[in-house]
Amino acid sequence: MISCSIGLLAYNEEKNIAQLLDSLLQQDLETVKIEQIIVVSSNSTDRTDEIVREYERKDNRISLIIQPQRKGKSSAINLFLKKAIGDVYIIESADTIPASDTIEKLAAPFADETVGMTGGRPQPVNDKKSFIGFAVWFLWYLHHKMALQSPKIGEMAAFRNIVKQIPEKSAVDEASIEAIIHDHNLSIKYIPEATIKNKGPENVADFIKQRRRIYSGHLWLAENQNYTVSSQDPGFIIRITLAELTWNPIKNLKILFTISLEVWGRFLGWWDYKIKKKNPFKWDISESTKDLKKK
Image (cartoon, rainbow, N blue to C red):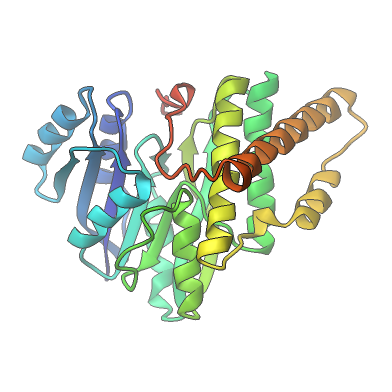
């Protein structure tokens, strides 16, 4: 039996935290045991803490850590790591929802001692009919296609308990963990059957805000941890993107729209990090990514 601790990183997640905890408590498990579910709430000002306290009273595996001041997601992850027990640690953003068998599928591969980290497939609930909804969906689809060839972890990550802390100034926490696992010469596996519902931005401003922060974070990662994830290889991205072009002019227009937003976001991220010397490890929240409806 593989034991695991789950860390949920939350900031003002009253709209989603209850259904997330319900989903974790109702997981279909065979070879995996959930020892802990730790919610790290970073200076939440809504009802997040109150809701978690209610669940804490119902199930002794659930506990709440209140971080009085927001210091970034990586800082919150380190608070979880100090309390985590078991063979495998799993971190998940509190604005996502895993499928009923996702924990089993993410943790079971650790029976193989050469496996150091696993990640599942995020599936956005955004409406693909809109331009911005398509952009969100298409980027995560490209993430999936890349991860099938070169594992790239996002939104929910499981890793062996050798990781005791990550750099607090990292704005790309999963990638920082990947770097540590890579340094231990352990494998990273992408599990596409382990699905996680998430919600991307619903407007251009939030989309750009998110993309520039992520790219700036990867520039920091390359400079400080000497690690680059597959999604930062321009040639790799271009090859996969070109393969998606069709004779459908509307779809091609949406793809070009997505590419233009990504290029602009990356330029702004480069400008932030290289010119303005900013590292957005404590970022402004994109409000339109909240209120995930379970589907």
